[in-house]
Image (cartoon, rainbow, N blue to C red; front, side, top):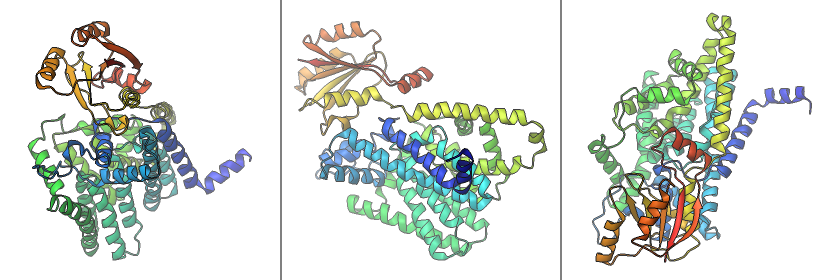
Length: 503
């Protein structure tokens, strides 16, 4: 096929080409982007779901007969999906943790294509084909999106539902009430995945009211309520004997502990988005979001409501803002494209404009390949995978004496073993742990994992004073991405792990 024929095929099949590229990068992420990025995309999703299968009920997310267990304050919808997927895997003979996680990543990679497809369709409806193509390419290849698409984060998994709900409204030219009902039901599923999407849903309802679609707003709201009552009210009624138990506990906890986590000024997310979307192109996109807000009001108001709420709320973790990033990209590039074509300033400054985009494409490509092909938390995952060859592991020690704080290890990779983890760090010396174990008769540790090689010889010598018979097993290095993240921010404790067996 000649180059001219390829160009002509692309012109006739732009969306197909975009979807193919989007799938390719997500497939690479499913294969190579193993591990997990942060606590929440493993310990409150994967670990909880597998523990239900194994009968251990980690962190007591489910009630226990005879014990006064309260709801955890997490929606059970997404862990329930993982529980169902893991159960099917085990029933067909797939019990290897790495294989199960590959299946999950692959399924989520496919599911995330909904964002690219309907993102393109929404912008095509509002702005035309040229803007839709630009939006599609950015959604397909923005540096963090393929990798994030295969992470087990509720902030990521809820986005396809939001996108489908918006598309059902945008595409409802006949204004059929049943379609508004269905849109509400679909977008209500996003709430059952991630409670904070309620602000997005509220903004969408407000946008419908501004468009004077009063009856449609009511029907849309009914669809949301039906969805929420079924998944939150119904499920909690079965499990906790009262509806919305998890949501109420979640709300109470966040109101009482709003300042217990990382807090930041109100403009934190503005700076974050400006950096994530790569300046100066990020400034083009932010300008576009506000430049033509009336034209994309149906997206603008939900995003604004979501953004304002999270900017006001004290707890500002980076992942919280992810549900609206694809919408910011879509609105921004669509309105910017329209503005650019009418701008005499940018027509006179083509070198500056082209240079800005060349810088974006180069940096985005480097970051895209780096993240898509890299694993995360490799030292922790591989350490547990290594120990999984031993059976009947009841307890082990994680020695992290160079730092003040414990590091949770992913028991999921231990193959149905849920041992006790003893943590040693600066404020918890080994002598204190051993005295406690000796006096109480608690489980004696079978392995010790030394995190980080700094002062390793001295630390091993000190540990041998308490447990003389330890035998070296292996050393596990962090991935390249882990090393880079630690270099950028030492708070990311991605250390080399040295494993010893305690004889």
